[in-house]
Image (cartoon, rainbow, N blue to C red; front, side):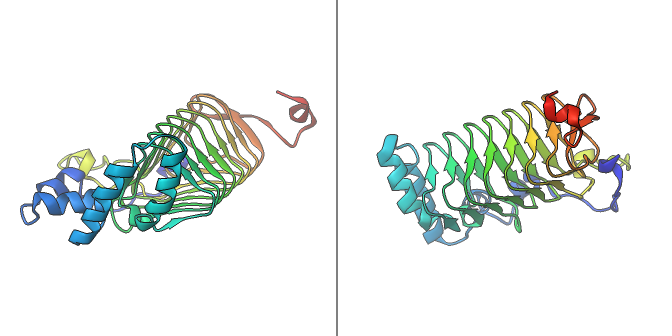
Length: 261
């Protein structure tokens, strides 16, 4: 299986969020700044607090305008025509770049904590309500003309997540890179370094509702992933897959598939 191909040295320990919070050398304020602000200076903290407190909850067109103007002071980039809805959570916003004509809907979480992680969105990216993009110690890169439905969870754990252009991702889909290690019995699994291959999704892919994509998978260009599928292995270009685990049930290159399936 694709997600089992690479086995790193499990003698390496993985630092968890609990470890970060338990550091006695850091004050509570320093821990907060590390996890939420992404900067150590008092100026960074005040800017983050003031802008998110006053502008995040503002509804309507006024809120869109205020966030577009003032969130440029927080984010690494805010492109032309980009709209950020109310109650969007930004963690370490200096590592988040938004392209042109993006739409970030209400209650989305963009979490780039865990250096050297970052989140980069191309142009014309739509992210639906309550979707979470989260980094632990890797990156999330999204191409152009991508629609991500509401309630999705995309996490770059140890390996990167790279999504191509012209994608449609159905609601409540989960894309998670990184698997826990489990080879050693003397170390808790959550502290073992697992697979670190990451996930790559090619251009022009259609992913149905409630799909699960696991670490080490590469989904080829032009493919279709049926609703509810659990993708454990690589998917060829233009393949149609479905099921648990996902299996190839057709190809877009055949005449039958072009007539409908």
